[in-house]
Image 1 (tube, helix red, strand yellow):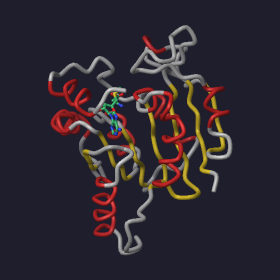
Image 2: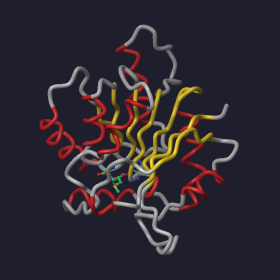
Image 3: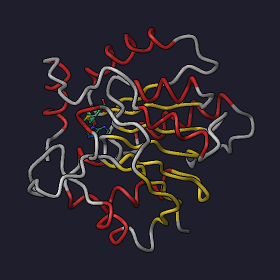
Length: 220
Ligand SMILES: C[S@@+](CC[C@H](N)C(=O)[O-])C[C@H]1O[C@@H](n2cnc3c(N)ncnc32)[C@H](O)[C@@H]1O
């Protein structure tokens, strides 16, 4: 698994071959599937943040998260292309599996809303997961699901645009690690319930036929 240094090197060296230069077109399908307005959405492994910015344009309160400190500047540069926002997305630098960024996010949430309980148990309403799950090796699949169960509301959803679906690619060759929707359904049994799956209506040309939009709800 690439460690934090490897991701940081990618960003510092400006070697980001995964970067599409735009948000994922599948995001524009979400308003027909899930309420987004004013929902607190986490975008882990957000990189340059295009998806986070698009979700914010659609009225969500978005938190981007990335492990690499050097992703911060490109995120803020990309942000300018999407402004203005009702609520500008926030970026935290940290490990999805770690707790420091979450404490920071909780503190921010407390200052933003009197209704947010005064605990570190701040949870998101929704996650948008694209090119993050495939950045993790297969042995972290269940940790990925369990982490979402910790940081999302009990009635929350994970909207995952599963990519790359590539049966011919060796499973330990990555990132990106190839994903198999059927395997995910089996692996997450008892943890996450699949409520929607379909290929997105539109994929970037190089990713055509290799993506599937899967929406999960948390099982208590
Ligand atoms: C393949 S890139 C995708 C970036 C962005 N989603 C995109 O499509 O342009 C994966 C991103 O996840 C970040 N990342 C990897 N492991 C992470 C972790 N454990 N916690 C938070 N971010 C992580 C990397 O720094 C990198 O920016």
